[in-house]
Image (cartoon, rainbow, N blue to C red; front, top):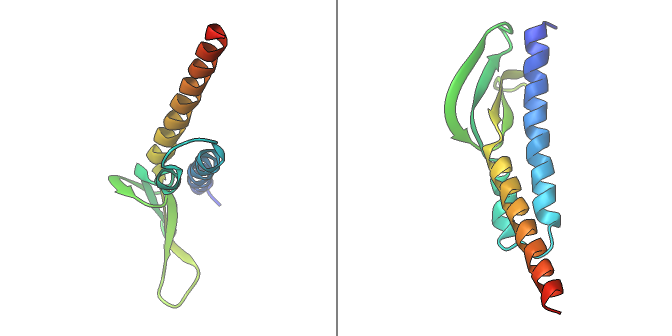
Length: 117
């Protein structure tokens, strides 16, 4: 296995793990509105790379939007991947920013409630 292939597969796994962690964070956040809209949005990726396994030292960079953030395609009638791609997990970062904002508003409201009592 070449270094390029290993690094590409690690980037694809990291992209998918970030999306999964963001989805779990969104689903576990109490009081977050529209969490079932934000949860699938965590898996939306934008821009990334593709690697054809027949030529593992060539990475093809592209710009696009897709769901999920890491995927592969196979040859007909086989389970062996032919093409592996990953995208930057933009949806996960936006969902994380939404959770951060939700927590900041909750903390501010709690501080206001303590100050007024």
